[in-house]
Length: 225
Length: 225
Image (cartoon, rainbow over all chains, first blue to last red; front, side, top):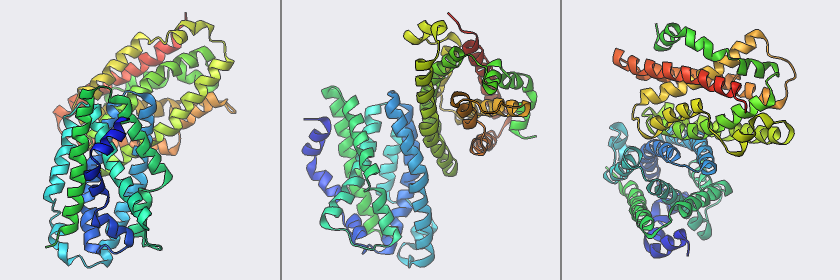
């Protein structure tokens, strides 16, 4: 059994939980309240910005040139398309939606506590860890989770003719290129996890990150002032 | 006087030397011997690969989101176009050119001593330094030097109808997008160098890197077995 198969089998319960959250389910039906989408994107942007630093750190520690090129291409991609989505959609929601339930979050640029916990982990990885296994496992989990909710909802049936704010976020995490990217990250995990000790490091990061993803969705979904 | 103006004025002599080397001059006239071009690209690929890790590290330490996005886009660019040039041209030279004067370098995958010195600096920056000033200054210098030789030779007159192996390398370092990129790196240096102490750190890296660029060109140009 491969490393990835083992991780997904042994921790299937928490992985399934992370990909079937009401936040992403409702997003795929176009029924997610705008203030919830706003909260999610507002918080996710913080995560995205530190995440870009983390991508950089992972590239710094990738000693396999072919893989480094693949990482580099993806850094280029998220610096373009994904960044544009945040800018466009946050602007649109700010101008057109009732955000009175999250006024303080918006005006004081709050960070939710579960997001802080996740950002702390990203900070550790970006500025303290020197373990490529930890770095690549975190990237794998966060992308696999996103591919996961998009696939989970595709199987259940995503609503037709969704607005840009919903559809583009789904597209970014569902198309062939994104699936290929997640597979690449999985192959990097397979490449570097060689011993049972390596597996323990990888597994600890896998479990921690999957749980943080679910907590992140949950805290954005349930936030209201 | 801005930081960049001051650096270029106080160290004009070594900067001019770095942009007017016979290697790049002959490349721009299409007269550079193929084995010299091969040596240069063979060595530069080592530098390019570690350089990509260094780009990653610089992105990790960039705490200004707009600048991080610009760095990320360029990482995407060099992982595509620039990487393709190396692959295509090294293959072409290997198949079609007389490389008997650099047979050992090729077969034993040698690293020239001045290249080792430069790689040591990149290793220090990628895996030890935590100074964004050092990181961004090195990136600025290496790109400014490349824009420099392309501009220097344009002013003197680049030969028309050059082969791909010469023209593409010039194009990659001369077009508007590359100039904008170098200007961005310069603006990052300006943004983070705030005190005279910062300037000293920046200046030391500037001087060291410019000299290493010239030594790099020289050692590839003069190598023969």
